[in-house]
Image 1 (cartoon, rainbow, N blue to C red):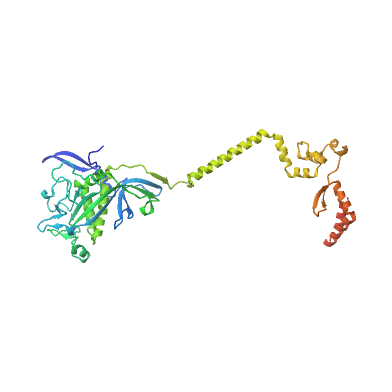
Image 2: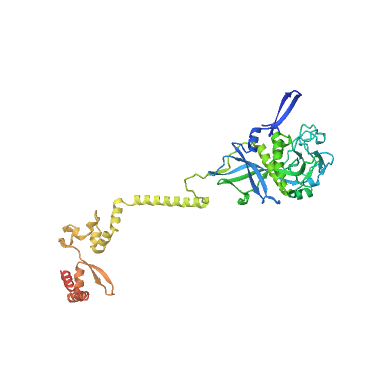
Length: 459
């Protein structure tokens, strides 16, 4: 737990003037390193978005990032983001012609006043050269209820989100603004001179604090126009007090960061650019001054770019459906294999397998049916010439089976064996066969070879 509002700390000490109480920023060293871009762990990043709210310019969301973020790791992270909008109101404020005082929206102060809480600006006795910037927070957008006046011990910090404030600058830019570059600013009284001749301007600003998610991809931030889920949410009002406190107490870092923002913005030669530049500087400073109380959190999602595996992304329902079908197919295969093993003998299965080969089919076509009906151990036993003599027809050993072709009555050709080959010769007539062979040999110029074929055929 921390003391309200968590971003500052208080301590007491005794000096030559007596007992006093001091206030400062929690873990100011880390805040200073982050502000000056010298931190080992934090770095300020920003996202631009114009589509989230209907405004004239893109909003800049500033937030703390990890200084070690690189190209090797992509991630989606949650963070606290700050954005600020400012407009120049110097032209509608009243500047006192006899002092450094001014008044805006009914609020009266001095360009020499820092706006520190607990001090009434009308009672301030600050020397003219003590400060260059000041800030005053308000409880309302109309800037009618200033925060932290007088000797109040409570409500010194505005617990609200957005935060509304006036801020002013004296002495920036430290140059002669009568040059043509600043004609628009001077002629329209956006930039004026105080009693001492210093340039002054006043801004009306509001700062919003968001809970935001951002994506880091391949070493850079994925911008909101590349995402559909960019919907930053306003944080609770207590964050308004936490973020504004380092500026409200006029801490050294808070004052320095306001001066930096004013110094950069003052050189712009249009009121819009001046307000935008200061707004971005204030947002950056607000993030930096809260760095000391922020703790790192685990990424919502992350993936390494050093993976050596090739991955793909598929919808879940089709994937699980496919896996289910494959599991069902595997189960059915196992069931069929089990049934085949239980209902079929191994010897029978091997014999059927052998009879389905080319040798088995040839035996089934040309050998006697009695051979096919017998169980055999080898496929050769299906052939008649491999049968024992006593099993052959007539008890006599037979020669090799002759195989030939016979022309069917319908014009086609059929296979015939043994005696049927001889019958084919008888049917056609040996003369006709010889005549056909000689004629073919003569036509091919191989008459001698043809006669040899006849001799072989007769044998």
